[in-house]
Image (cartoon, rainbow, N blue to C red):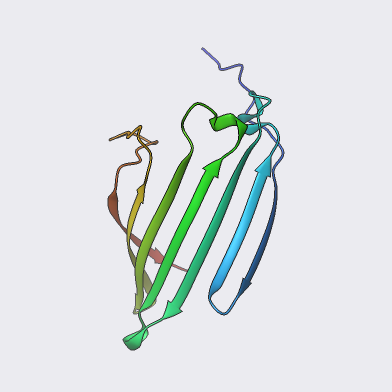
Length: 122
């Protein structure tokens, strides 16, 4: 059966960055387009070049707002190491959240995990 939910909502954001640091604040007054409840995401990132062409990335983000009243608000974080070999990019990341409601599998899995990303620009 087709879903009658409308996942179309307005979001505004502002971000700044300098010297490897960046911060971004995203806000919506109707999270998911069906709730009429506000939500925001605040994130901070840092990236730096290391020796031998490696890169280090740090991220922390916070989801909160009226939509999350009663639970569900969370902080997420990640640490990544990247390197390009022969035009192919590799990035090894560890990602996790502080949520009490861990989901172990599926598209909304949020337990700590290591992810390897391989990319090639054409």
